[in-house]
Image (cartoon, rainbow, N blue to C red):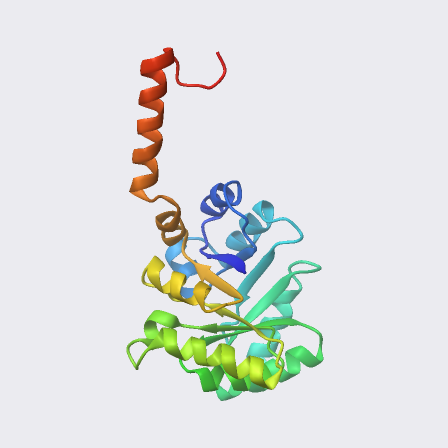
Length: 222
């Protein structure tokens, strides 16, 4: 499974990159505007902390077909490889996905609210599909819809990877990992919530206290 961070904070990416096996980073227009940085600054800072083998995703902002394709070309030109444009699955976006894939660009279909939208984007050649899991729960069972999507892709032999997005909590991530999701994109704070279980630190503290009481030190080596 690919673990992708959903953020415009390069420092947070660097910190988690040192701790976990991070596949890459996704951003979107809202995340970037809330960061207080320009998209150029976000791109420059992120590409400084990501290796050439890690993926980077930025989103087209234009809503019309020509504008989306133009944004896509600009985004995918930011680096020689492992650069992807995120394109919402509107009618114009679906049309743009076909064009971008014909040009050999990396594409993530985004703003997905149903398994059917995602499946059609996969038929148009999208490399990744980003269903908005928690937002989908406003219209039904988001986790169940993503599980349906995984089955639909497998039955029809489509190679697109599902990168589940828009999580409220770690349990939603857990359920989709259990279902065999290919990728998730998660805010750094949710990832840390998955890592920092309070019971683990309690156990470590007990070990250290026992060791210190017996041997007068807090390391194995004397």
